[in-house]
Image (cartoon, rainbow, N blue to C red; front, side, top):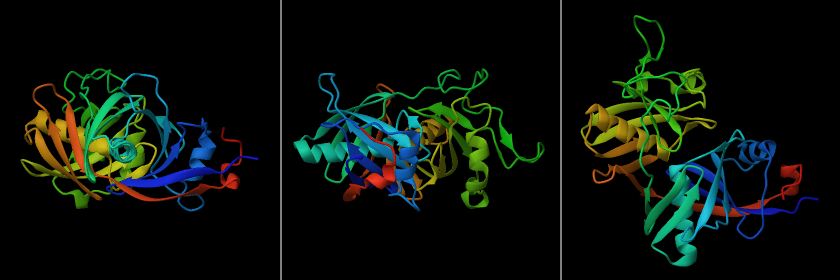
Length: 288
């Protein structure tokens, strides 16, 4: 019989997580178990499931394993980074927390309920994103949805911020149904590892509104790496400066694409919503 697992429920601007603590006891989940936990109708419900694991690298507080709601493991999640950093800061009293993910080591500084995460350096080369074919200029690649002479969405900027992202620039967010086009674009053959899809409307030189379809999760209230990707893509295109507010459906994130080293600094709130126990019946197979 599978032992019950305690969990925390957290969110960053509505991007919500089920968090499991595997620092003292190893936890291995199947894709089906992740799906069962993440299911909003029959499980606990979340955009991503996070597992905190011990790390052997000196100076690193923990390893953060990230699963999307569909069950697959992904490399980075900006909002989860801020949530876990806030949680560990509360445990340890530290004002800076170091977290390792599959995308690398991230440092986050904590100021009350706000966390600034250093998300590292974005990647712009076509084979780093990655794309299925070469593009010399990734500020806008040849990709469109709709009639060839009147496309609905076209010429996205592409960038990797731990995950592959495509940002479509539009004049009116409300005029586009990303819930309709998101699955098609996420799975477009140009993206061999699929992609997070964002539609973005530049409202001012320091303010952008976005809607995000997250790879493996669907429409989400917030996506930290998408906010990072949008900020750097806008700056590359000359649409904004390097400091910008990204307004997501769940609220704003402050972005600073630092000139000195090209690191992206993302600032926003984190919230601990509650805790509970995952019953053995939900897990089915043994999680050990």
